[in-house]
Amino acid sequence: MGIFERYLSLWVALCIVAGTAIGRLSPALVGGLSRLEISHVNLPMAVLIWLMIYPMMLRIDFTALRGVGRQPRGIFVVLFVNWLVKPFSMAFLGWLFFKHLFAGMIGPALGDQYLAGTIILAAAPCTAMVFVWSYLTDGDPAYTLVQVALNDLIMLVAFAPIVIFLLGVSNITVPYDVLFYSVLLYIVIPLAAGTVTRTVLVRTRGLRWFEDIFLAGLKPVSVIALLATLVLIFAFQGDVILGNLSHILLIAVPLLIQVYFNSSLAYGLARWLKVPYAVAAPGALIGASNFFELAVATAISLFGLTSGATLATVVGVLVEVPVMLSVCAFCNRTRRWFPAPSTVPGRVSGA
Image 1 (tube, one colour):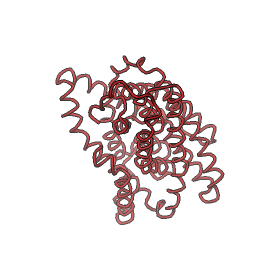
Image 2 (cartoon, one colour; image 1 turned 120 degrees about the vertical axis):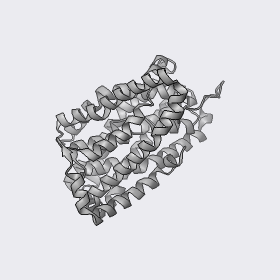
Image 3 (cartoon, one colour; image 1 turned 45 degrees about the vertical axis):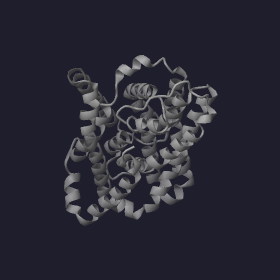
Image 4 (tube, rainbow, N blue to C red; image 1 turned 120 degrees about the horizontal axis):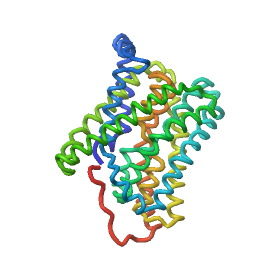
């Protein structure tokens, strides 16, 4: 795991400090950037988000779906947790904490915003970081690739309906056209562009050149774009954050419970179904982690840069790495729960 992935929470914390300072010291600059909009889409933010998401979509190899039948029980467990449990359990936890247990500390308006942000976060399964988690737990790379590709295909059609349904049940108004435009702008187009780019370059230059040269060269772009996006978000939200520092901790509570609940559920189901460890471990991590880049982009599109929903998705970025590393450590310590493999699984290419 590279220095960026290992210390992601530290970089996010530094972005909070830098963005908040910029917002306080250069309000004219921040105001000018916030007014660069077309149809309620902030142009600087849209460019940065695209630079984050496009390199991740390049890693998705849909030819891997030919191996979807290799580990059917492992595939079933993660699909069940990702799409039939996680969004709905997050909606329940968000309702419990933000609308009831924490209601007196945050108020009804912010409660709705934080609930919306956590729902959006849970409705988007992780695409990129799971390759790192799979590597750290000696996961089966072929299974991990198949599961990510399958999740991305399902996300094309299921993300928007799940978000609409759960926000509607929570009595949170959502502009449907903006949500569908977000799916088109931040899922469909980047995924299509990534698939075409990958296909053309692998055919013309070879897989090794594509992974070792092209993808490796784009990785710093994605990292810088993510950090710049966080700085910009916190520059816009500086006053809100300074007035509500405790809210970051409050938002983290249901997010932490959600991660540990879903990873435990996926891992426990995999053990019950006698899934091999090399599939059970990455399955538990895929089942619990989130595509936070997409969640941030969607929250910004639906509720705005300075919204509580956007802040909630960013807190998801803040807690992701330390929590997932703890899940990795648990999986590594409990691999004896599973039958010893006859062969040692390979490592994830390009992770």
